[in-house]
Length: 430
Image (cartoon, rainbow, N blue to C red; front, side):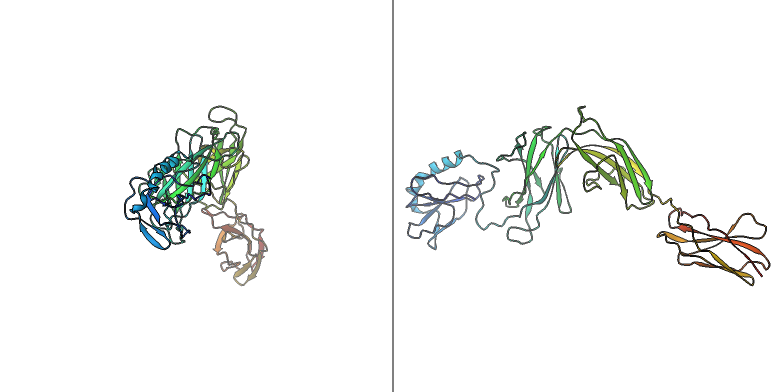
């Protein structure tokens, strides 16, 4: 918005503007020859004369003074019009800091700023991601969003900050996003312009634009240093366990240029169900320290694919190098349940009733009852029960026979794991 308040005496006017002219009206007060961009509270001065400030402004425009509308084509342009060329020359020569944006008419409803801006340095490129605004400046559901301007500024290499001259590096058109990815309220865009240099420091911000061409407020500014990519980790392996996979690797000693790496910040681990997939979000919330990682809470029998990349830098966002892998692993339950305890057997006439203590294992699927009869050296499976049964009746025992019973437990894995058998309990039928 153009703001040119009047100053007393010979003081220079104070200018604040966005230099892209769109429907700009300049109000000139013919008495004091001060310049305004909106309301004039001095009701004793001559009526305002409102004129188009730049060529190409069309349509009927009105200005207000003392509650009276004034058409912009008025005859009082005689003396103020002499100031117009001077004013335009001043505006063109004034230095501007920052982005040159739209000239906003008071009352225009704009998109709110984007949120959650993130940057992922990738050696010779930067991946930006942000969340789309859902409301406009009036607090209503947002409609008419056309796209986003992505702006970049180069920062001093010594780590200092200064007022930055942001320049437009790209535009994401929501109708034709091109290489940008728009999904689930998030937008991702890659800056791979030749102006990016390893070792350089950069600042980014994103600006929403509506269908009328007006831009909303700037996002937060995110700053980063672009470093040479670290080499990929070496010797990546994956070992499957019960609902988990353990990854191990060796740290890279050099970057991709062959120079030593002395600023490793950790590692990112990515998991996928497809060998050719490219997951965007690591499974680790913070950089992994050291050369190993355990991924738990997985499904047994499912094949998982992993890649691991090194992170470089002293502070985030870090520069992420090429990935090692993929390696694959299928978690499996290979650990059997505990051995049942407390087996008891009570002989009766032509039958034996057995019971035992319940197993504490959470993945218990049932029990197996074994019997070794007279003259037998090996026990044979007699029957099975579900996980809630801790009794079993042998109705096939012969009178005067001596029998030895034992019990094992098995889990719900595929294939299932069976525990060792309990100690035998021997009985003699009457």
